[in-house]
Image 1 (cartoon, one colour):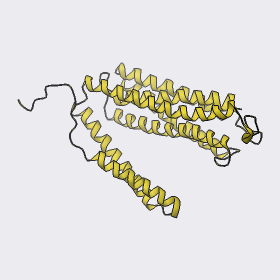
Image 2 (tube, one colour; image 1 turned 135 degrees about the vertical axis):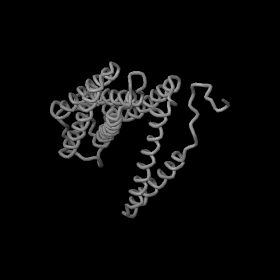
Image 3 (cartoon, helix red, strand yellow; image 1 turned 120 degrees about the horizontal axis):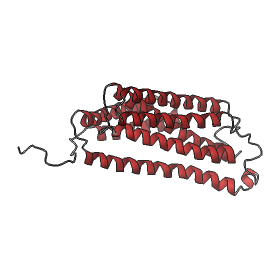
Image 4 (cartoon, helix red, strand yellow; image 1 turned 30 degrees about the vertical axis):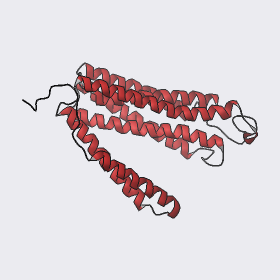
Length: 262
């Protein structure tokens, strides 16, 4: 009786993964710096491999705690929602920095860019070509992930898997289209503030799309294993929140950088 749990909170068991991932990040950072100075890349790849392994094992333990051990009670899930909300808020501020840099130079162009925006020597993308297609792809993916969410709430497992599958496919298509756009870009990253701001803003968004797609792939795999139900599915809900955040950021990027900035 003394070992019986008398509260709804989750006191996490000691885990090796936080300190393991800290050292993995150290190896990755040192390896990356060493690669930049000596073009020897094995340390960087070793750190990346250690990091990926540690992340997989840590998230595996979290899934076990949630799905099989029952530690993620309604009270714990509320705290998870608070945490995910704060995480997305921090991501918003991250993108605010890039928008700030873009609007600072575009609204007040100086002699460095010829006192005009976009600079005369920059050929911008046609916003109504691939950028518009990518906008429609992301908007459609937001619809399919919402479809999957509602299907899960209605305990329609088949529709949940279908909607999530379509979302993953659309996320993958967005990444391919953006890679194609970058490959045919008429300007590069270095040597000009337009290219630097453009690639930092849209490139980091593309990186978030890749992370979000991986997030949804894991949820799809878990869904096929029978995980999630209408009352216990925060892992998927967090992925859906993140995906909608990615959608909204892209709408601002499309309107500000591709349409207004052209």
